[in-house]
Amino acid sequence: MKKILTVALIASTIAMGACGQKDPGLKDAYKNYFKIGVAVTPRNVTDSLQKAVILKEFNSITAENCMKPGEIHPQPGVWNFAQADAIANFCRENGIKMRGHCLVWHSQFANWMFNKYDENGNQVVERDENGDTIWVEQPARGGFGGFGGFGGFGGFGGQRPQGAPQGGQRAQGQRPGQGQRGQAQAAPQMTKVPKYAKATKEEFYDSLRAHIQVVVNRYKDVVYCWDVVNEAMSDANNPDAPYEQSFRQSTAYQLCGDEFILKAFQFAHEADPNATLFYNDYSAWTPAKRTYIYNMVKKLQAEGAPITGIGMQGHYNIYDNPTIEDFEKAIQMYLELVDDIQITEFDVRINHEAGGQLQFSRGEGQVLTDSIAELQMKKYDELFKVIRKYKKNFSCVTFWNLGDRDSWLGANNFPLLFDGEYQRKPVYYTVRDFKKNK
Image (cartoon, rainbow, N blue to C red; front, side, top):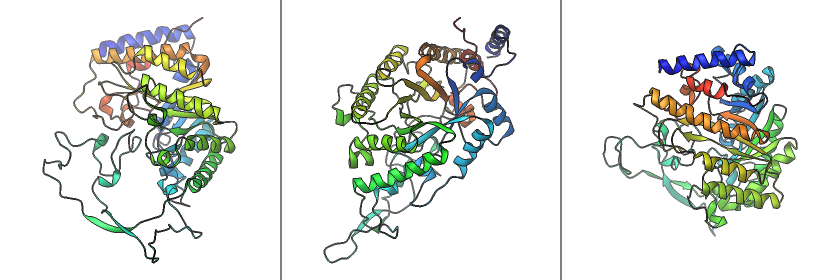
């Protein structure tokens, strides 16, 4: 590892002399290409060391978690603006523009929007023919059953529910239906609760529109683009699947079909006609999902959806995810539909796992050996070569977290350019000190 670092530092010194700047940041190296962004937490923008790294290296910022619907708007009339405001104000004070993330996501969503409310804001219960409340049984609160699984990047977008296993995994060696010590779990305790009436599609749209209007208008002075809809496509690996089967069977899709995507983009455009509006998804390079995304965007654009950008999340690994050929093929397909593509959640882990699901190991016992570090540098180099090739159509590349210690993947997956102490790793110089075309 020491040898790699020495070589990287020598290469960096040569490159710095050639470009005439002693120590350029990533944003400086790519100033004629595209923005270089980072996803942050409120802690990142208040700690002095982390602030300094952000200001030197990046010129676009994404709030990792606190602008998601379920975080910022957890109940009707309840808004949690403090954390999002802290990040937005940091950007305003330092002249940095933001990516808005995100307005609709099946996982951390404001699920109250699917319920019906009376004129006083009280949730409506269903009643029988005698006018009596209908009661249903459901598992009592407690344990992990209430979370309904962790799939789809995951249930919680990098933040686990309190007390949940790391990474959304079962304990090592644990089979479904067993506790962490291998004991069979007791049947969950049940409790009776009222059966609440569900919102109609029109009522859902009213709530969604109001939510989007408030959030977009609050941050429109600092947000230049939005991930309007996040991860709406299925993980099924069948490029030939019928159109209806290409969608994640979320509550929104079951209620509205693909129209909820159309409406979300229209509502966002109404709120800020100047913002670039992205559909964002992981594994967007695979033959199946790129086909799903392409078909959906093409259809909804024809129906009036102002989808002007596509976000390829970029949760990759150092081996075969993505293949460079399929990565470039996806870019070419998307450019038939939009002029703006971004890598929105870039990280490259050192094992064979990939994608956006929360079903992953957090790297306990993994070691960043010299040979593994070389593979990671090679993968980042190959990906950036392709992205630079299409620089006219890429507006930003965003790393998903500042340093390895922040990563939703865990520090021991070593996915980023900065280590756990926010120091540059050798792979940083691979990305920064590329040979520029004259």
